Length: 130
Image (cartoon, rainbow, N blue to C red; front, side, top):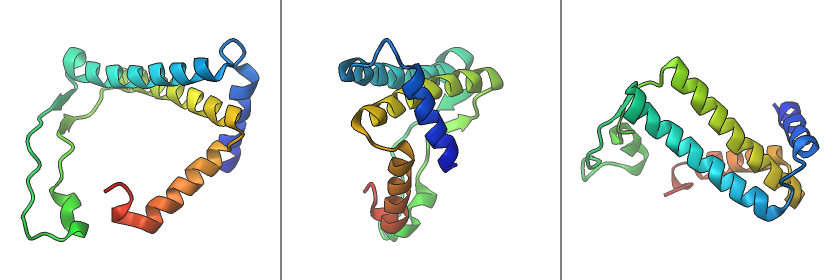
């Protein structure tokens, strides 16, 4: 995994020619993220392979925080079909491309970012994003 991540980051650096400005990359990353959101929305609104059934999260009042996950819903039913998975994968790839470009410009290893975040998640566990 470390080598693939490094290879990807190098490839991004080699092939990102036209939009090398930090401003270009930041806005392209934001645009790519919006396209991921739009592609996921289209799985619901156009294809229908996924449905959103959102309601207020329900959990017993006396539950331990560590047990809360089993009561939380993603509000999704179904799975993206092959065509929607293909579009989502493409859009996620573009987002990852610009994330790697941001790492390149700031001299940060994408692999190091992932390693540190993984360590933070596993160390802090339940309290990571609460």
